[in-house]
Length: 219
Image 1 (cartoon, rainbow, N blue to C red):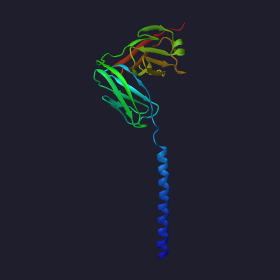
Image 2 (cartoon, rainbow, N blue to C red):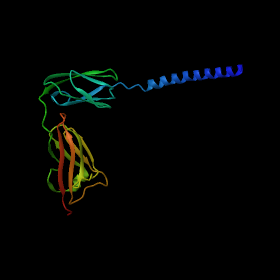
Image 3 (spheres, helix red, strand yellow):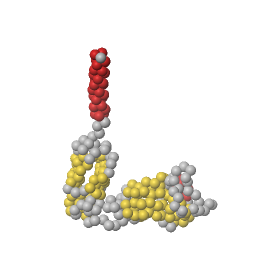
């Protein structure tokens, strides 16, 4: 009985020592998982005028963690960028921004104007709505570009007249939307195509994009 008790006590002591070793190792792993410090890199817009119902995009070199702003603004987003949405009070605005990963802060200055209620529009591009006899070869080589009246975010895609995605790569950035051809997905002759999508400006005004064009017949 005494031998059994001694064996049990030694077993408990061994388990306790093992738990201490594992615990110390866990602390080391925790230090390695600490978030990297983040530094502010840019804002869009960086300053100047902003509509009372507009928004500001904040960019960082790493995930900034919790971001707070004052005296106004609602923060959303994840990763290396955050969006600060109004409403903002018309007049001068000094926006104080701070974040937890790295304990940084910065200040941005704006002049807040009346609310923006004007939706963005398509102002031009490689093809225009209603174009006919469009040569498909330059489009397959150089892609398609459309321009907007102001900076927008969103998406565009190249579709058939029936609404099927052709498979080109679409991107919207600033005032420009681009569609890049993909090998094996080239467009053909005597076919109706539609550039379709949805974009919105910083104030949230939304526009449905619909640009229809017809390629020319084979020569």
